[in-house]
Image 1 (cartoon, rainbow, N blue to C red):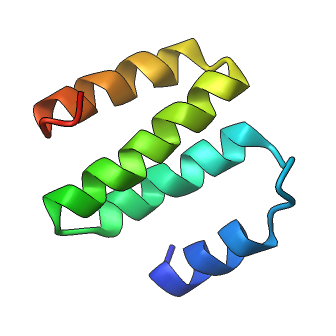
Image 2 (image 1 turned 45 degrees about the horizontal axis):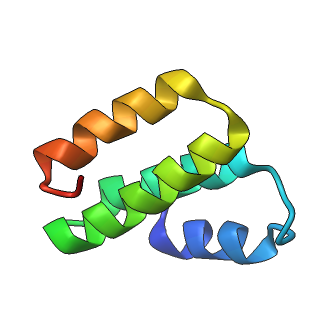
Length: 72
């Protein structure tokens, strides 16, 4: 997915939209970023949305990734 497509889908989601999809989009955005601070930012948002969605497996995986990047 391109940065433009990610941005467009994030903007199109209703504020009360699917938190699991939001988590996936932020995770994809983190993968596209080369800047560690930007990756932490996106992964933190993915983590929060995964928590809201109740996706425990994704939450644990994101916590590990954030720790490796110094984000938790």
